[in-house]
Length: 554
Image 1 (cartoon, one colour):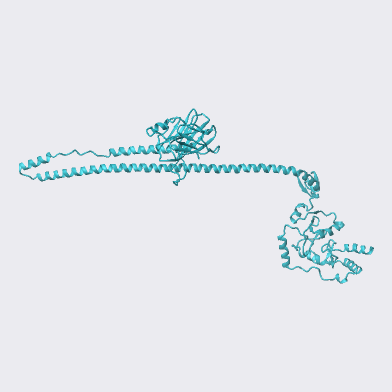
Image 2 (cartoon, one colour):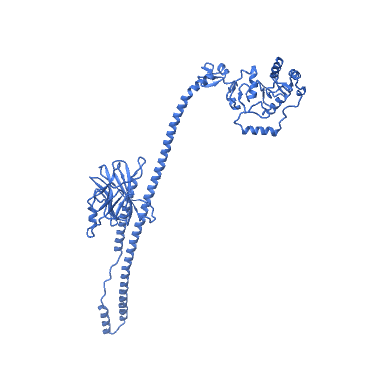
């Protein structure tokens, strides 16, 4: 048993650190460490830079690439005796190399495989099929699988080597001092940087506070939670600020879109109104032209008749010029002189000029009448960034009103007016208003009223102290702030919907309408009517009155 144990111990000393088997044709490097000849040749073949220094797989000592490997004759003799003593076949010493030289294609395939699995660190000592590394030796600068790590750890002179988790050449370079090439084993508290022993002894860190990397690691672990929490707090603040900026960006885009739509609708409405009024004025001009031409043609016909009569008299007198008989001459001249001649009327362009001047004045008044509400509306009611109007969905307040039926969303006439009653008088002297259940005393608000089923109504705002409303009757639209008509009524055939905008801060009320019948295909484009200032008397309700048909809230 003792002999077997001695043989086993001897065998452990004869193991190559590369192939993990008994030496075969052992050769030695300049550092004194021995390896199988074929193992070193394989390592040299896989060495990517043949002209650079070659490191010993055990101690990491660098030297020139060994062009000729010198046999370790003494170690070979020991191996022979070991095989002969332990009944191993002597021929095993001289057997063919365990590893054939790899062709260029095989090397290329291995490099390609390594590139594909670059995230996995492989053992530097495995020759044929590299196994995943479990540790990297910082001293040897080599990564080892579990089998080669076990062999590495059994060597007493390798016990002081620093082992870390598997890492590649880039990480290995970061763990060494760029100035001295030594391991970064110390930490400079003064400069907050990892340094090597030479940096502590000779460089600018000589007089600084130095601790070990392990001690600095323990302190960093203690500081980690606080640092992480600080960064998370900062991250949350940045995220909140970013969300605010994104929300602000959205508001800017929404505001720009609102401005754009508002102005486009306003100017489109102006163009539509101008086109409509243009057609009316051109029609009036055409009628005046036809009337004037008719009168002119009558005058031309009369003048032609007068011309024919005068021309006949002139010819008769010309013929009478050569008459020698006194009696005939006197009779002929007397006959021409006795004929009645009407005075030629004086027709010039005064009447036409006065007519055109009157038309120019009418056109100016028309343009002012059309553009003034839009100008005031564009200036006063462009949406602001501070506050956007809130769309209010109103309901009618229940009340007892003679001839009316009041529901939550519908206000209609159930008792028609007597046909002999003066309708304007009734409309302008309605003894009641129907109020909304909601009231307003701050902010900006707007609501809509469907008016297509009534031809006489009033819509506005008010309380016990004042009323401001727009009135529609007999196709005429007027605005009454506090009971006073501020503009001349203008005619509109039918109104489908009214929009009321209340700005409590500016103390203004704006009225707009949508014309056209429902389902007629016209787009719902609001046309401004007027913007008026109201007295400071809050709260106010939306107010409604109807003389025929019904009003409804959408």
